Image 1 (cartoon, helix red, strand yellow):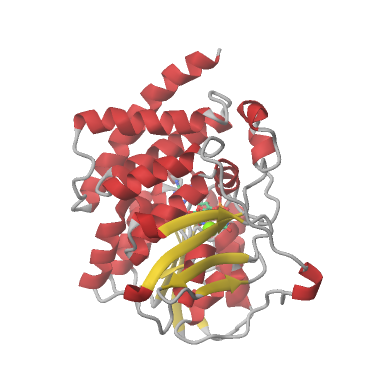
Image 2 (cartoon, rainbow, N blue to C red):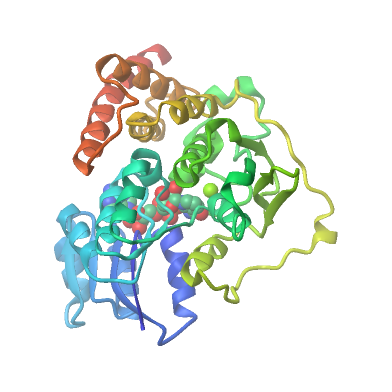
Length: 393
Ligand code: NAD
Ligand code: MG
């Protein structure tokens, strides 16, 4: 039996992971499942999968979780320390699918006990990429990308030499506001930005798709995980979301990875790697699809892409600041404190404010450094946001 844990089990990626696990009875032993405020879902899944422990992120929900699990023999725990303790429990494969910077520390704990880390939490690579990879190397642990684009690049590189790669092209759907005139974007509401044309995902990543902050994170992720130079990494808009990424080699060959927009492919690939297994995803009918479209992204429309380029050049603590400021800006947009186009203003100003205080390109050498930079960026981003929200009125 393969021991597995799922962090963020109640979310979109977590539920898709459990769907795959449920299709292979007597194959997996579930160690830990974690969630947030959806206690009923967490308890239901923990019982159905006979988990050893269920953890809610929120300490004030512990008694609800204990009640829901009473008599089942499943341990209930709550809070950040409990999440890290659960990640340190021996497991062979750990899915990192908490949303946001809260997912970083449990991923480190999983690597430190030698588990294979299936990484959906892109924030880990963006905020702490160099440290995450070196931690994995120290503990002989593998990190497998679960973002669809990075799984696609990983697959296109199988059997290839990285030194012969000329470029990597990450595709972007363009998000829910793709067809809006640029001058209307300032008025977009969270509801407008929260509908995705192709993918069914959590609310935060769906809005990040509309602003292209998601693609910006993915460019940085590509730089950190695969080690390509920033000038080798491009983004292209591909509205159908059928090609997830392409890798171009020195002989001009371009290897594309195609598949339906269903995260169970990338999750299942990481679950079965280094083998492939049959997966319950739709098969593409190319004749019916007919044509695939591509378009260069417009930097005026998507300032996040330009900021990602700066972050890829700076590295060090810049990714942690970028991610934290983006999370605060997204909170502000969701609370209607700032407008859709002001999210990138908050991130850009936070980066330049912090660059006056510390050298952003200095590497973050410990998880404490990552936390420190994350905290500082949140404080500064809130200050910047208070000013930016005034400009709106
Ligand atoms: P989601 O919002 O659907 O689920 C998030 C999960 O994290 C839930 O289980 C929630 O309870 C938990 N959570 C939220 N805040 C937490 C906190 N402070 N502490 C601990 N747990 C917390 O998100 P999702 O769409 O499943 O995305 C999860 C991660 O995977 C994100 O990093 C996202 O960028 C990445 N990702 C998602 C997709 C997708 O298709 N959904 C694709 C690629 C990458
Ligand atoms: Mg992606």
